[in-house]
Every structure is written in C-alpha cells, then in structure tokens.
Image (cartoon, rainbow, N blue to C red):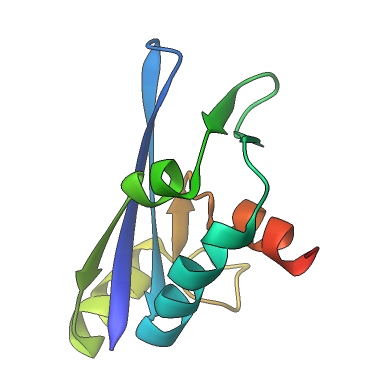
Length: 107
C-alpha cells in the first residue's frame, strides 16, 4: 500500500519548509527502524545556507506524518506532481528522506 509522507519542519523560527513523498509501506517501515542508527545531531540543508538540525531520531520522525493512501490516490499525485524528467515516483518540496538514507547507507 502506498504511503503519502508529509514532511514539515521549522527553520530557525523564520519560516516553515514542507514537502511530500510517496513511498511503499515496506520502505517506510525500514526507514523507521534504520533512522535510530544514525549519529545525531545531523543537519539537512535545503538551501544555500539554510539547514534543519535534527537532534535525534524522534525529531526526524516528528517532522514526518505518514498517510496510507490507495493506488488510485497515488496516481492522482503522480499525474499532477511528477516531474517530466523523473522516472521514479513523487518527491515534491523538502523531503529529508534521501539525505537521511545517505547517512544510513554509510553505516
């Protein structure tokens, strides 16, 4: 079943950053288990000099809200948000998963 993962964080009390990604439930479960193995704190940059600081795995997971969606709902997101140059699914806006997955893969 697809998971719509809404990502939200506050940058230095100046502005909020948002994004979403659609992943499968197995990927989400693996991520939740592996995020505890990273050495914290970590910074994840989203701009030239802007970064979100995560102090713990809990702070990472609190920035993400998962929603189970149907295949038809995932298709609607893909229809309107998938970039023409992308072969993979939906990854829109700010999403720390790739950066954190890089940290996990270095373990």
